[in-house]
Length: 545
Ligand code: GLC
Ligand code: CA
Image 1 (tube, rainbow, N blue to C red):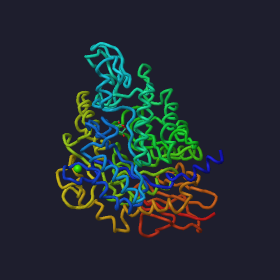
Image 2 (cartoon, rainbow, N blue to C red):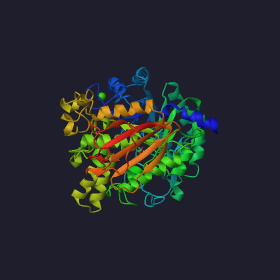
Image 3 (cartoon, protein in one colour):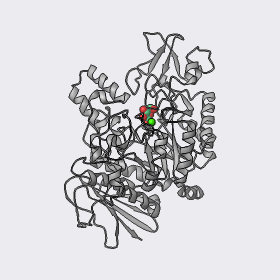
Image 4 (cartoon, rainbow, N blue to C red):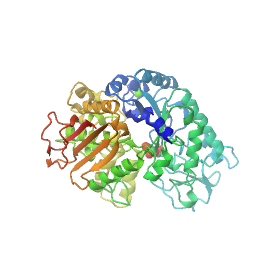
């Protein structure tokens, strides 16, 4: 056990920061309005300057793009929209020269309906690929059961030529794969090993907690065989190389997370779970049903994950990804205190234990957008709008939810500079650019010591320089304080103290750093008063023990 612990302390993915790229919105190299692999290669200097250690690349495999690449029709080829397999190989090699590893997005719960397997599977019940998917008998009028798909409508789709339904947890173009079938599992492992041989250094596993479904019992996530499947997957693939693996698991509890990320390396390196980020919705309802953020609860949720995984698992730290609205608009202040609050949120998160993830543009404090309904591109947003209209919701209410939670908030083009279309493309972008790009862009921030970009740069550097950020034990302070988020991280040698005013009002700080503590980073350019925190003020102090 001690050995495992020590080995695990040294894991390379514990002191790096991962940067997520949503390829179609990052950088377009050929003017077709869609970001691509050459575009990413051209920005590697920027990413190295930021200091990140790995890129999580959202899907670039061949896909009809019904769900922007999360519907893969060939796992071993690149979609021409993003480039070629050679471009991908070049990206892996070039990134390596910048000490950046590539983490690919594996979508293993479902494929595209245009995948060769599914094209075969739907030909007949006897086809060798039929059992790669999940089928149930029925009649056109009587569906197997009332299960719903995440993007609206029934989870069952009728295929008249064979008189059966197939199961899909997402869109009709994303049929669920049947993990019960050992032949399917073998094909998946071979495919993953092929990518490992190409030099990929890790994988993010899309909705991995949903692979072991049992639709007859209405079970979608955390199915009985989930961890058995994961252990087999890991043994046949990831354990053969020194990889990082991160499992997207909406249904993870701290208890389950310890299985996923067991330090014995039997499953994955870490989980990507959403408990903290789902707090601002009405309990038991959908994300669109907005509720104010319960701040004390937020502290409790973070503290519970920090405490329970300590020494027994590993967590991802994030505010954003391609499915979530921009954090500065959501829980910060995207007007008067945009810079202060974006930095506060960064400082608060990056002081904790786990591997931090930055989603493209977060390091610039990019904000949400308010589009007209037909300017939205996301299948989830478009379906939601129709569905709620039909249910009789008022248009303004639907739009309020969309402004707050649409996934397209995160998918507008990366804001590189103040030129046309924010320097993202020479053509016409596939989705509108946020109109604030003239003010909020990378060119403005790279050289500016006071910028949000520089703050992220500092936070990334601190994790590499001070081991206490990696292994220090977490202690929440002032738990009931209605505005202060404060905690310590302590190991045998050192202690850090993180204090953040989460809101706009100046407060008296209930926690005072002792005189021996040195300020490592803050979001104001002077140290201010030790006992007062200005709007969104955040500081990290440090001392040797
Ligand atoms: C994950 C992805 C999301 C996608 C869904 C279906 O949640 O992050 O973008 O739509 O899985 O693949
Ligand atoms: Ca392009």
